[in-house]
Image 1 (cartoon, rainbow, N blue to C red):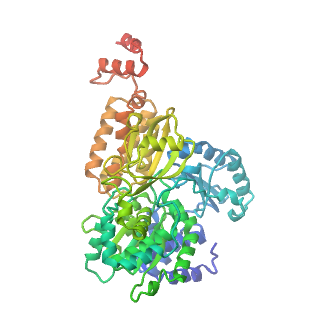
Image 2: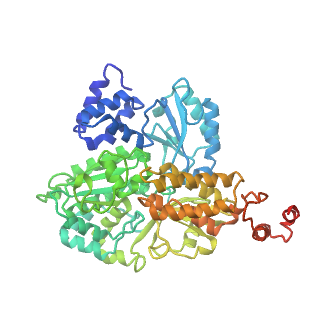
Image 3: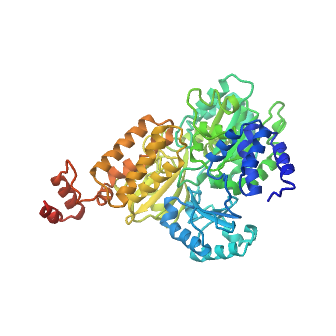
Length: 599
């Protein structure tokens, strides 16, 4: 903690380390908070003056990210992961237990200032949940009642987190099936040497021939993106790796950064050679803060081996280095222009496009943004050539795809398959014996019912950013959709009215149905909100926010209908239609007899 005597000098040293640059604001806020516990108005004012910003600008950024606190939150800040898979494993009851044991109200700091307990969005640990973050620097996995009770005792005894049992913080890779990306790793520098032997132009041609498409979900052609950036005028070009893996149910990039960091950084360096970049930035999601030091160690080792820095591999003029920027909790920053805004020290509001980042990106420089898995694939293509990559997968979807499998299955974890693999094959391999639904690609993806399990993962059939959540026969798909609705409402950046207001209205209607007070009109309104948000939202978050609602309403409609207030006869009430629904739900011809008597 800072003390009043040394606070100013320590802050000045921190600012000097970041060059007192306004684009470092998010990092400065993060580091100041790590030292002081929260961000006071006085600290924000000092930061504003040092960076040449207004207090309002700094407060606006501090208020945007959910991991920044402008009020005290206690010496121990406990955040339970609130993804639907954590709930399925009992996280809500465990959080309630901890609050009871600590005598703390959820979302509020205890009177003695020691602890607060709250929830956060998915922490990327769905394969070993329930999980929580403690003071944002550590994760605790595989929670159960006994572990929660021990946590309460340690907090009450004021035991520093660093002295808690080490095995609590173990994060397993749970790698169940490896293919070309997760298999035997090449020696550091091997792919880069192969790329240099080809030359920049030939390497670009190789990436284009590979038909590699972005693995972040959108599937844009990687070679074309690199080519557009290479051709864009500008004295400086920038390579950005999007490691803001915020889509609930996705944790593949966590494993790639843990096991294959060299391949990620090598892919970035190859891209730098192709587009003529000297600067690289890796945007690491705030929930993965615990990976920062290991990743920095890999970067240091690569610099020592002349794989980063000046004159890489003794190539005159090939100067490129990578810095890591840690996010502060904002799902919308997974969108590339919002990510760039965050890198520039601003609120993560998606930009209006055009111009696109390849023309006008980080600090106005031509910038490519690719995700972790895409850069790993680029390294593979540099090492083995485009032909080896296109020999895997389908005509329109070359190579492999890594899946983060969680939910109702015996073997959650990481599975790498060639594109074109059927959903049912993945379910068999992970031990999902009674699945009624699979959410592919996270909440913004698609929900598949059992009669669709023959479909295949590919851009031309079922595209995915990597999440693969399994829901067994006993799960309530309405509650799954309601959980996702609340996630999107919480993560809306608030920039545009259709998303800001629409996502809130969706939650209110879903909550009304959950309370048993819904009607057919509510379903109609939900469908209208879906259409409105899809067609008028500023960015993809609002456009995709109702995907779970739309899919589950169409494929699991009885889960909604059973929550309607059947005895409330509204204007336009259609008795025959309601009786038909009741009979279909129960399978009995007399299901609506009592309802008929009431008429």
